[in-house]
Image 1: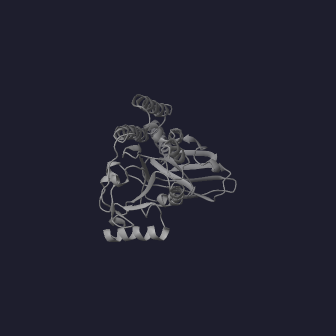
Image 2: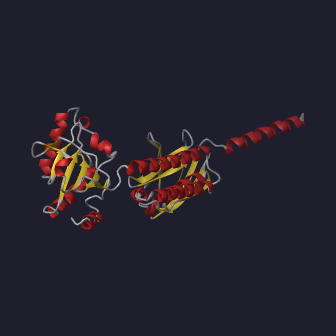
Length: 342
């Protein structure tokens, strides 16, 4: 009987130890050097999970629970945020510099490899540079570069051994999506390569009256700004574009601002969209040729424009010089103009 009682006690003890080991919460602590914020928040895609106090010396410690193992966000301010992989049972310790947020972070403890892996991936992404330079390569060089990028991401993944299977799956999916994006975009861009005839727009509304088509500008270089009144980054480029138009006013180049304002952002009315565009052009005293695309999306679709502003440079024969030209604020644009003899 004594042996049976001892056996039962041992089983209960082992069960208690197992439960403690697989605790249903996360311990999160660390120290942020040069920190000036008082709290950090941990959030999911749907909202804040936990707010944690940061001591004056930059240290913090607390516990929290999550619904499932997943990528979450923690931040000390709107300008300072970083991804973190959390799962109940983790015991994470973080060290880093608040002035070098995220890229200086190093995790240790149970579950640390997951977040360290994500930071390594982000750092690698930052080394990719300008994607347009990759897309400008000749086909063989492009394929070799793309393969090298994939090998690098695979190498990073393989160098972290203790990663949750769900994160491995997400990482592989992201790499596949990136490879597919570059491959598809490269194939599409070949149809928009330098020297190929530009897609055309026809009968777009001219702010000064009447309608204009792209063919009306043959004989001149054409620099097109595809924009909208609701687009903040577009508006930021306007002062630079006005300066360019003024500087090159007597040169063999036409500056066209092509508004894509549409009904969905104007109360469902195309008349309201046109009025919004006209009022904006008048209020900002925009120069150059101001056109409105209205309900014709064919030019945007032909150039596969899915974000604005987008700048396009066309030669006097109507052929593409650059389907994704530098912005007005980029000094490289004037260098391009000079190389073309503009």
